[in-house]
Image (cartoon, rainbow over all chains, first blue to last red; front, side, top):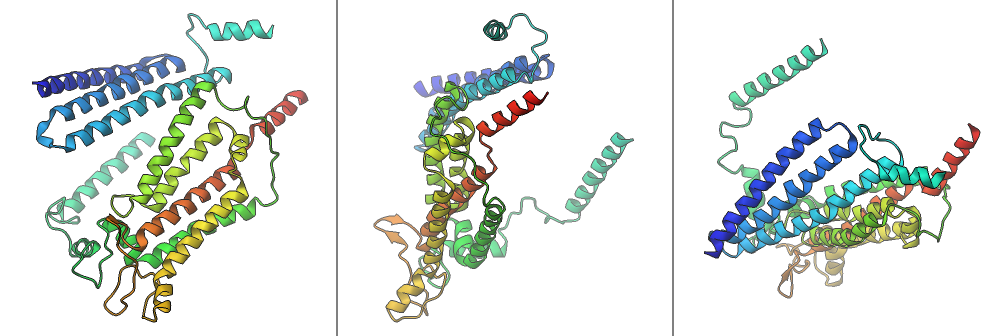
Length: 124
Length: 271
């Protein structure tokens, strides 16, 4: 019974991952500036990689016909998921910070940019 | 016109590739149903306790081939890699950049630094696993060493070059580590011969397991752990040599941010 729940939950998480990947791909194509596209890319890494990896781990746990090997698959998927969860935000943070500080990417169209306002008020 | 040319190249490539496959260029079953004779030989001899003439006592066929069946080739490959590094080192000799002990304020933001602290340990662990299990699973010394070299590269970028040098990973330390690795590879290659000379029995250079006409060799097992004779030692030393070699190159190619900032400031003042 628990295995069936794990399988359905895993499949649901993988379906969410597919949806997030699709959204991220559309966003990367359609969004107008660097920071918005970076946002779409992180939707792809967290929603489209972390979530389905957890789903794959649950799916492996539910697949009793794999015997003891399902724990290896589940463990591998879980560790990968945690590493992606740690690394993806750090990477996108470093990209966004570098792009903003070097003014390499223009914030256009802009609704609000508190970071720029802070820098302007600090420098004078 | 350019698009048409590109399209023509793609269509031509696909047509020729299809022609090659259809005329049996890759065999009539792709992938082939039978293992080829050469591959079958290697699979039989890689780990075969009953055939003492050829076996390398390693279930990983690639590592058996690379460090046992054609060990001398691999030694020369290793030498080519080191010659490339020696070339870079002699190019950069005399080029010294300043050293700094105050490094807290340098590098990327604290978020990236914290994540790098966590992942550097993971990278080193994975690299050690790739290299030390090279005789059991796909991988080996070069791959493990290249993976391990990513850790200092990350530190170089995230924390700054000064931080890496303050950790003790300076050029001369890395060169010493690389030399120790190379010396270890050489010693491993001669180990069976040295044992044979002391035991007054015939032995070969690059010998791994005992052969019918040369009964000395390195043990395949230590306790219950399979180490495949020389293969474990080759992988172990190769990991150090490759990791240190790559890190030396990264250190040489990395420009300290202090010097870049100075340069930028001077240029800004000129304008």
